[in-house]
Length: 544
Image (cartoon, rainbow, N blue to C red; front, side, top):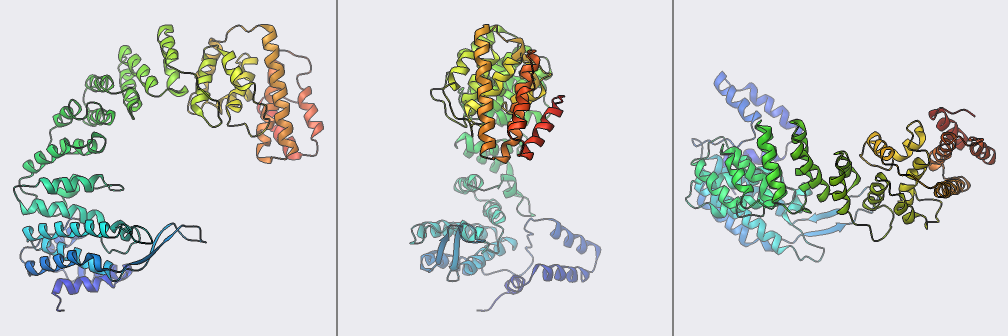
């Protein structure tokens, strides 16, 4: 087979290492004779766009298309030998290992570069046909190889294995760019294909990438963008929204995004959120952003994904301009969309008994009490923030476990009962630290302020019952940790011990350090624990 000059160059480059390629480029740069050509050389190095040169030698387009058709027709004839590696072997990674591809990777790479060559020569119509045929070949390959004995093999399998000497994002961009440069009247099928390439799993292709894939300006770009917007308005909003925003910016018509949220994207929070973000980027008036976000919240389902993010955006902007009505609306809607402690604190921070009662009425008591469930824990913490302690205590009093409950419902709520017995006194730093570990991203000072403000009157007998329960749980927990020598939990055991001493000190009980002395004597051989107790007492401002 006789290769053209360009093909010979490409064949040589494939054999070069990165160091050899760098050396070659430097040698070539030294041969560039004048300033204008040097500028072109630098442009090629700095720009990833395909450089169109219509003056050079032309490839036989008909032969290239015929070869690509043969490649398509014979795509099912490759005998690929591969196996799936489960990743359990030493130093191995999960995925397919292709042992023999029967020359497919080399043939595909050559087919791709033949398409690109037509494009760089300015043979746009032939290049468009070639790229369509190549991508149809990819689809056919995936279909043919999805039921292999060793599992499905796709084009993406070769890409992930690094077996193609091709930039896959560039190939996708050139697929669309070649169609645009061919300047054909009906681009609908090409645009639909480009949309699929943009939204497929793992893709980061943008429409701008397609429009700017070559150094020649795409003709009739206004018409292309208009057709592109029509296609996007037909697609699922969750997938198409980012592309609609991009199209609005590329067209310099922000009203496209505004029309979108009032039609196709009406019920999709992402669409409204994207519009608001675009308005922020364009430094629009805050009032306009508030109007757009409010409109979005009013037209989306309360449990829709990302609606809480939209409400947060509204709350932030409303707070900035002291729009109390919009801020209140945003805070309440965010809580309705995502009921947790973090979103509840701003609700109670409104200092409105009416809105607080309304929010509480929207929370349902969890049906079961299972470990590692923040939603259930937040429900009971919210109850305690409102002085309703009995509901929380009833949920955990039957749990008799004494170890391993740090992340359970009991382990989450226990510090709140110690804090309750201390009167939520901020001077009890160890107790406050224990509570702070259980409230995720919420501000501990805000939480403590609310707990103290809403602390309800507790009958003496009930307070005594809770105190005895806390003492018993603390001792059982510490004993369980130390007898089984769970060294990773020694710090937490020391905190619990010192926290109970803080309760006794604040309540002016006799011998508040007696419990500490008892455990220092009982476990005097476990020096690591003794060290943790001393540090915890020092942090709490106590001495023994």
